[in-house]
Length: 378
Image 1 (cartoon, rainbow, N blue to C red):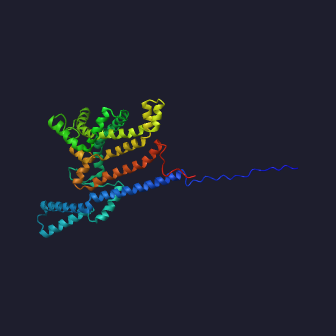
Image 2: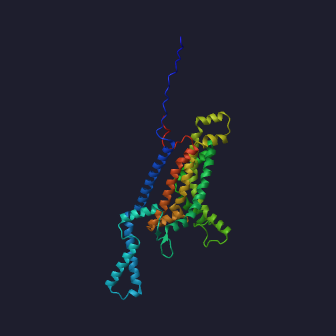
Image 3: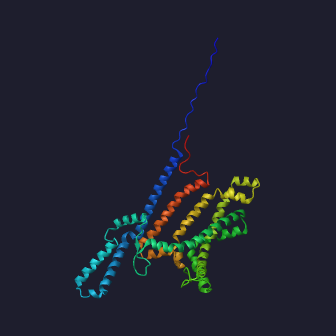
């Protein structure tokens, strides 16, 4: 009798089908984010243009200034005194039309605002009648680049130093919760509700007006020292009061908020497990507290660097610090729209680029963070 061989039935394994590949998912996410941020930047800049121009009212102010200047020029020109009243009036109107056309005021504001927006987006910031001894036009780019180093020097130095002081101080306080130093920081944290320029006024009154040991304001002595070492010492002397005001405004609350944040992560179960294993405090802070908080720390540092660009208009005005903040304040008082929009557009681009890159930085420093949608479905 022949033996019958039974073969095993074929098993069909269902193929795992992903809705989309990882590369396509990331590409789609990047495209959506870029479109969203581009739309946000455009809307924000256009609103800035409308506000800076007061809905077109600034154009009427400029037309009035042009008419007044032209009338004064014609009235004070000796070669035009022989003209009759009608001839003088006709000449004034012709010169006004030429000047308005040169500045683009012959077009409706709605048309000009769109053209202004296009130029701003392409960084074609144009010219500004601003801070020029010869009363001539200057490029907005020149004004920004001239004032930017002063702002970066003051706010960059103070903010970066404050960031690292806050980071290490908050870590130390999280280990000493309830200590006398912790109580001091908690008590002083409401001081940040007072603006930095307010502290600046008091510091100027005390150290400049009363004690006469520090200058009232400015960046260096007048006239500036020619020797480089003396110039640097003069610069440091003028930075003392602004730096003190910024530290008084920010340090206590920054340490308090970071310390509270670290305390939350210090109470996690995996931290208790690490302590039970006998790890020292330094390893626990580096591996189990700092690493999960890296996205938040990186975000704070990134936005800190961006905020350095803008400066602080009132603060720089109080200390007569020749930075971008004071420049923007003066431009707002003179209705100098190109300068206001110029500083805003660069800040908007920096902010949008930073927000876009932070998503990818998060994914690099924290494996729990996924770019785009959740992992593909089975």
